[in-house]
Every structure is written in structure tokens, then in C-alpha cells.
Length: 373
Ligand code: CO8
Image 1 (cartoon, rainbow, N blue to C red):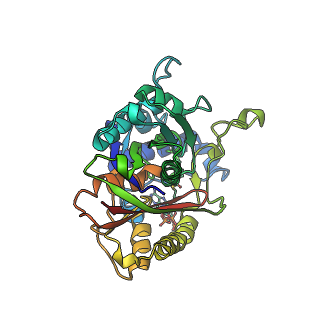
Image 2 (tube, rainbow, N blue to C red):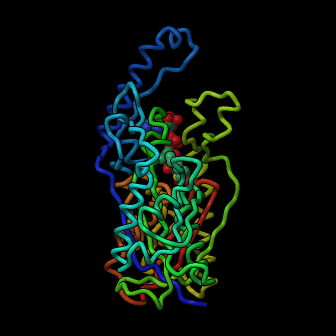
């Protein structure tokens, strides 16, 4: 079996930042408008009044301080509360493909490759812009890549699950050089009108190049020592938007057609699952968690990441062992652990061991154990 490496990564960062203060101001203005509109029903006890959000709560509960978005004005307009994107003609590059191509070109440049070197494109993300043709085919064409492309969705674990598919394709010889790209336009599926979750997500796109070690020319190579995926069905993170909605005659704007979660349950159930998963994966590869130089974890909640690493290494650890990027980016679904890897690997030395691990809806957990070549 060939050795397989991650030989380059890229990150597209959207042009706009929304701070917690800006977000809370817009949410509170929306809540005031709703309360005014519904005043008679609230007075009659038919509806609860909406309660204000708070910057202090958001930072304390999640560690998130700001998020990047593709559209700011629509999200912060208290009469709209969602991004506004102009529809594009079928002949134009679609929005998801546009940000994917940006991140992909950076990853290709880092790996010393061009689109022509790519013979597999996996577009892996928590949401796809359309049903078909696959986003991956459009991205493949825009990059001038050959081979094949397909889309895959395992929510927040889409990127790690795709890295396993890419590594297996290279190992088996069905592809030589695979691009994994994660365009996460989470702002379009976040319920900005729900106080419990309006602060959670941000937009971004990440990309990595996966190829055989013997074709890699980049000086920045990470040998994939092993990948492990697991899923366990749970309704605690759910979104019922789908192609059957119009046949069910349901309201497309109903609460269940955007992101919903039981955040407390997710926290309690996923922390032990993720810690045990990483520990077992490392053991099976002959390592102890204390030998890991860096954990690039999914970025959903600061406390969650601190607890997972504490379970693994037995003590409180700082940013050096498990870097946190969600303070700047918020939860970027499957891109979170890849942003952490992209921004925080340059200081590691040859021989250093690292773990990329995602966890999220499904539930789904994916770990990728790597060593710097
Ligand atoms: N401002 C002020 N107070 C608030 C707010 C707010 N915005 N929201 C809630 N509160 C109040 C509540 O009303 C409650 O008050 P009381 O105690 O009086 O009832 C109190 O704060 C505590 O509320 P919670 O118990 O809900 O707060 P937590 O401490 O549990 O924190 C979190 C909430 C931050 C959501 C936390 O539970 C968490 O982060 N959990 C983990 C979540 C997680 O990991 N989710 C993974 C989802 S990511 C994923 O898989 C991707 C899915 C696909 C993405 C699709 C794109 C959109």
C-alpha cells in the first residue's frame, strides 16, 4: 500500500465580520419588533414574549467572539434575519463553487500542483446549494481537473470523512491526487431568529490536497497514518429542509427547516464519544494521546474541546496542544478542524504527531492521525 499525504491546504475567508455586539443588537431589535407585533397575543398569554440575547452569555457559553459571513446586511436587518444572495444564471459559477475554487487554488498552490494534476474532487459539506449537478463536477470543471467528482454530506464530519475516501482512493490506485473541498455557507441554514443558536455558525471554505507520498513535491507533507469514522444516529442536531417538503405541503419557513439542536445533550453525549474514539484510534495505531503534539479538533464550543483534550491527556491544556479558532470563525461545520490545521501546523517539526478530529450531527465522528514528514 502506498503512503498517502496531505500535501497542501487552503482557506477562503468571507469578506464580512459580524461581532457578537453587532449580532446581539440586531437580534434584540428583531425581538422588540416581534414583541410589538404580537403584543395582544403576548398579553393574552397565547405567546411568550421574546427575550433579549447577550454578548456575555454567548462568549461564556461558547467561546465565540465573531464570525465571517458572505452577506452581513441581510443577517443584521431585523426585518430579514438571513443573508441575501443574488440568484445567478446557470451559466455563471455558483456561489458555493466560487468559494470552493478560491480555497482549492490556495491548496493546490501550497501542494505545488495545478488543476490538471487532480483526478478526484470531493465536495464535502453540511449543505449543498442544489440537488444536481454535483457541486464537485462544477468545481472540477472550473479548476480544469480530470477524473471524477462527487458531493458528500456528513454534516460537521464531512471533511474528515472525505479525507478517508480520498486517502483510500489514492491507496487503491483509483485516483492519484484528490482535492477535498469544504464550502460551508452555514449562514444560509442558521436560524438567526432563535436566541438559543443565533450566534453559533460562520461561513468559510477549506480545501486539502491528498496524494501519494511519492508524487508529493511540497515541503509541507503530512503522512496519513490512519483514518477512522463512526456514526451513531441521533436527532439532537437536525434540519428537516429537503426535497420532499413541497410535497408534504409544509411551511418552508417553519422552525424545523433550519438548524435545530439540543445543545446541552450534544455537549454531554459527544464529549465522551469523541474522547474515546480518538483514544482508541491512537491505541490501535500504537500511540498514547500524550504522544500527540497537536489536536486539531472540530470547533463548536470552547468548553467541549477543553474537556475532550483533558480526558485524553489527563490535565488542562492550552492552545498550543489544541488550538481554538472558533473565537474568530465560530462553528464552521466541517471546515472547523481543517481551519485549525491550516492555521496551526507550520511550527511543528518532522516526526511530530497530530490528530484532526471532527464531531457533529449524525452523530458523526471522524479522526485522521497524521505525522509530519
Ligand atoms: N443570550 C442570553 N441567554 C441565553 C441565550 C442567549 N443568546 N441563549 C440561551 N440563553 C439562556 C437560556 O435561556 C438558559 O437560561 P435558563 O438557565 O434560565 O433556562 C441559559 O442561557 C443556559 O442555556 P443552555 O443550557 O442552552 O446553554 P448552554 O450552556 O448549554 O450553551 C450551547 C448552549 C453554546 C449551544 C452549548 O450547549 C453547546 O455549544 N453545545 C454543543 C453544541 C454542538 O457541539 N453542536 C454541534 C453542532 S455543529 C454540527 O454538527 C453541524 C450541523 C450542520 C451545520 C449546518 C449549518 C447551519
